Structures are given as C-alpha cells and as structure tokens.
Image (tube, rainbow, N blue to C red):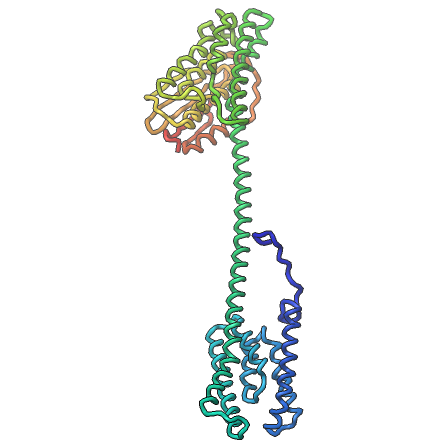
Length: 468
C-alpha cells in the first residue's frame, strides 16, 4: 500500500533468475534472434577460416545464445560479443549486451573499460575489413574515408546502447529510490499514527484519572460530613426531636453544597470552563442566610453540643475567604478554585460536624499558580475527610506554612475516640492517598503519609511555589 492508496501486487515469479515471466520470454527471444544472426554469419566465418560450415554455424549459435544471461551476468555477454567481433559476427549481441551492462548495477569503471574495449575492437575490425575491400577493388575510397568509416561504425554500434543503458539504469534507480522513500514515509506515517493513537489513549486514561480524582475530592468530603451528621441525627432522633431537626438542617446544607459543586464540575466536562467549584458558593451563603431557623441556638453533633455561632462559623467564613481572595487579586468569577484562603471554611465545616480541629498558618501567603492552590487545598481536604472516616472523635491539627519558594501543609490526628463521636461507618475506596500523591508529585512536590507514634495518622506535603 503506497501513500497514493494503490496496492502493488507482486508479479508472477519467473524461472531461475528472472523476477517475471515476460522478462524471461524477452531474453530468450533476443537470444534466439542473436543465435540465428551469429549462425548465419558463422557460415562466412567458416569459409574465411577454412573450417567446416557446421563448426562455424555451431560457433555462432553458442555465441549468440549468450544474451540469455544478459540480466544475470551482463559482463559475460559483453565479453562474448567482444570475443566474436574479429569473426565479424554478433552485432545484436554487442548492442544488447552493452545496453544491459550500462543499465545494470555493475560499477561504472568496469562499464567504461568494456565499452572502450568494444569500441577499439569494432574500430580495428571495421578498419581492416574496409581496407581489405578497398585493396581488392570492391570499394573505391580514399584512406581517409576508410578511417572515418571505421570510427563512425565503432561509435555508432557502441555509444547509443551505452548511453541508453545509462539513462534507463539511472531512471530505474531513481524510481526505486522514490518507491523506497514512499514506503519509508508510509511506515513513518503508520508509526506516527500508532504513536498518536497511543498518546490519545494515554491522554484519555489520564483524563479519566483526573476526573475520578476531582470527583473524589469534591464529593467525598461533603458526603462524609453528611454521613457524620446523619449518624448523629439517628442517635438523637427519638431522644431530642428539636436537636434532630437542627442536625437535619446541617445535612441539607451539606447536600446542597455537594450538589452545587458536582453540577459545576459536570458543566466543565460538558462545555468549557465555567465558574469553578469552591467550598461554599455565594448563592449558598445567601440561601443559608435566608434560613436562620435551620441553624438556631443549639445543635448537637455526637455527644457534643454546638452553639449557633459554631454552626454558622463555616458560612460566615465564606465572606472572609472571598474578601481575602479579592485582596490578593484572585479572580472570583470563572476562576478555577478552590483556594488556600478558603481553608478556614473547610476547617469550620469539620468543626461543625463535631471534630475538634486546630488550624495554624505560618508565614505570609504568596501568589501561587492555580494548580498549587488547588492541590494544597485538596490535600488538607482529603486529610480531614480521612479523619472523619477512620478516626471519629479524634482531635485533628492542620498546619499550613508559606515558605517563600514552597508551601507546606500537614494534617495530623490522634487515635480514634470511641465516645467522642458517633461511628458513621464511612466506606473507603482506598484512592484518597493515591490521588493526593499523584497531585503533589505531578507538581514536583513531596508527599508523605503514615501512622504516628501516638497511634494517629499524619499526612504531609511540600509543593514548590512555582508548581514545577
């Protein structure tokens, strides 16, 4: 299959050294014609040499048949033609032999030497024959004409087939070179197509992994908080209906926030980037501010009573996070969040779910690329989610450090407390730590996670401020 879409079907193979049968037929036909010519000229040669006519005819038949090997051994055909030149036979043998030699892959030095030998041999034989005819009186010409005729005859029988053979050989090699180049280009195109397909498959796999990681980060955290609140709601539903209503309000708030973020992410996947998913959107703030009855004076999460100020703390922190983001020049509409300034909101949501969380921020926040902000936020978010899942009731410490050329974060919790919070029996897919490690290492950072000596768990990450 060539680049033009045409298929080259291999021709039927010929006998012996011929690639095609028609080539064999052509060479055999030329050999027969040359043998007949040499046999007819062998009669005159036998009379001049004083040998039997049958010997001259047989000699001519054998010599003329040398053309049958002109493709396989072109040098042999030319040597036979030169050898029978003194016998004044083999004109067709000489012409076809020289053409085949010039068109073959024989080195040009050998072609030039044999062509020169043929010219000299033909020149001498023609000159001697013409001189003999002039002496006998059969041809009345001058000495100059004899020499001119000998030169013209020798060049006329040698130069045209040699030049034609050189042209045909050069054209054949050019066509073969072009065909090889086309085949090579076709192979390269096929290789590039295979590589492009592999890259596309790799890109699809990477995109699936990225989408799965984003879905996990966006949904799992809020759903985990919803499950924690639902467990508390189940525990106090019959004992204190009023507190159950408050916890149900918190579950509703978390559900709306999860749906909002999920809707935004699906919108990004369907079209082009739109308003990013953040911890709590401004519309959610307005919704929750219009429903103060859902977060009244007291709420219970586990065995711990939470005042209205604590329940409303995550919602109030949204405005502070937005103000901090605006003061640092972060875009609000159409930007890709979340941002590190929203860590207070994230921690407040965990506190509202009954977790005791300490937050410490060291250093002056810098202006980081969006991927650095998102990755740092997701690491803290996943760390808090893991505490909800695997260490219910334990105390967590969140540390965020801005170090100029890098940003470091750590989430550490103590051992799980049986009485500190209700067991929500949260499932775990085992992909949280894997996703965090992939995010951090993709930006050239370092990620470490493992148990502590006190029986808790620690998640730490350091990300370059440049993101690479």
